Every structure is written in structure tokens, then in C-alpha cells.
Length: 392
Image (cartoon, rainbow, N blue to C red; front, side, top):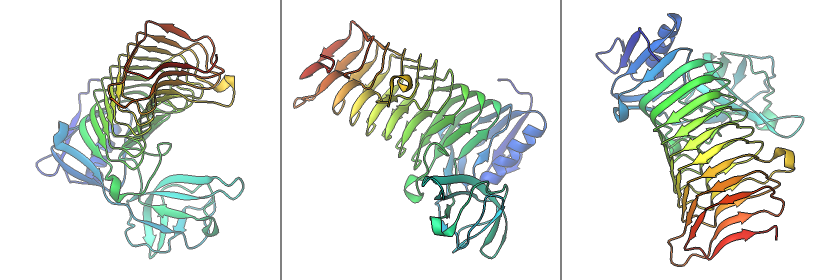
């Protein structure tokens, strides 16, 4: 991406000075009004009380590990009165820690089906403990249905945008001073209904949720990034996302390293180092088809190196995927676990290795209903059980 316009944001000595989300957002909005450009964030630590809302044709470029965007500690309270879907204001039990301009997440039990309503908004006005929102609620938040609000948000976010680059900075979610918010709504980076996105040389760390999550986004490239010590997923190519390219990243110390959500198709995950994730190195499941997972090093996974998730029926299983030339080392229980009615999977030249002396682990486990499985020149080393074929 080439841009003729460039604006700097910094703590001092920049074209826009400040050390919070307001200064960075001002730069993004200025460039967007002129058709796009590059926002250069100078070295420093920037404290965020709301997400940075990204726009079309913008490149966000930091100064490497010298540019750190960190989320301020969250606060949480309940709603004291009911708020209906058509309203644009809420009344809090305790307004301390909530201010105009802050990003918030509202959550309540859904009255009809027992699930939860979850939305994100910005506070735009206040009168004592009553706050107005930038958009109507669109869902019911009733006090007797555990309605609550917290200052939770992604650090960088965008919806319905295209032609975006994010480069060369650190995003710190301040995990232990924030409540949990899962990757369907947030992450250090959260994108929805976007296309043509390039994310490079970004460190996403310590978010109480996902590192990078993109939902219904097409042609997203994530390369040379570090996603570390996030509560949930390191990288989360989300539902309905087509053609993601995930290469040369390091995913370490997350709940799951790389999680293919629902209907992720024609993706490539290549040459990533995926280590010490608490559950799985790679998880692939519901209608995730025609993906290539190759030349990755997946080690010290808590439970399974690569898991093909069990689904209720054959139509929802992850078919036509290729695993090629991966190294899967010292998985907690199983190197590769293919579950459900999965079919048309090819495993070619993978190395499944166990070096721990007391290990009694399984290299490859094949579920009872797996069909059309192709195994070519895979190598097993140090395992008590190389292949546990439950079809036999």
C-alpha cells in the first residue's frame, strides 16, 4: 500500500500530540476524510480508554517495540433500571470510573432463549449516573436479567472497511486488570466484515480474550507477528472468513494458538511457530474446508497439537484439508486428533515427535467415523502409540 499523505502522532514533537486513544483517533479520522494515508505513531506508551476505530485506506505504522498501546484497567457495574432495545441511554448503579468518550461493553441475559446479549458502545454524554450512547442498544438490557456494563473494548477495531495495514507496534491488553471478553467481540485487534487487510510485525499480548480476531473477513494476511499470553486464542480467523494467509508468526502461551472458527475456507497457515498453548496448537472444525496447514512447528501443546473438532454431523465437519511437512513435538496427549465424520484429509510428511522420557502419548488418533483419509510418509518418533485407529 502506498500513500501520499502521512501524519505523525506522538507524546510530544508530532503533528498531533497526545498519549491516549483520542490523539490516535484524531489522526485516523483526519486521514480518512482526505481519502486515506499513513498514520505514524511515534515511540511511547499510549493509554487507551476506547478502541481506535480504523477506516478505509489507512496504514497504521508504529516504531516497532518502542510504540506500545495498552488498555487501561476496566471497571464494571450493573444497570439499576431496565433499558429497552430502542433506547440510547442507560442508568448505572455506580458511575465511578465511567466517563464520556470511554468504550464500554454491555451484557445481559436474553429474556427469551436464555443466552446473552452483548454489544459494544461509546459513552457520549452523562448526567450523574445516567449515560447516553453513540448508538441505540438494539437489544434489551434488563436489570433483573443480570444487565452489566464494563469498560471493555478491542484496542484496534474496524467494521465494513477495506484496504487496511497495521504494522510495527505492540498492543498490550493488560489482562490481569481487565474482565474477560471473548473473541467474537474483541481482542487486541478485532475486525468484522472487512477485506483486504494486512497485519505485519505486530505483538499482541496479555489480552483477556484473543490476540487477533477477524470475523467474516476476506483476504486477511497476518505475517511475522507475535501473539503471546492471551487468555483465549492467539489468532482467530473467524466465521465465514475466506482466504486468510497466516505465515511466519509466533503464537505462544495462549489458550489455543490458531483457531479456525466456522466456515473458514481456502486458507494457508505456513511456517508458524506455535508453542506452549494450554489446550491446542491448532484447532479446526465446523465447515472449515480446503485449508493448507504446512511447515509449522507446533510444540508443547497442553492437550493436542492439531485437532479436527468433533461436529454433530458429516455436513459440519472440516473436509478437504491438507497437513504437510509440520513438526508436532511433545503434545500433552495426542499429536494429531481427527474426530467426527471428517473426510478427505491428507497428512503428508509430518513429523510427530515425543522426547519426554516418561511419555505414553499417541502420535495420530483417527476417529471411528473418519473416511477418505490419506497418509503419506509421516514419521513418528518416541511415542508409545504411533497411530490409534478407532475405525478398526
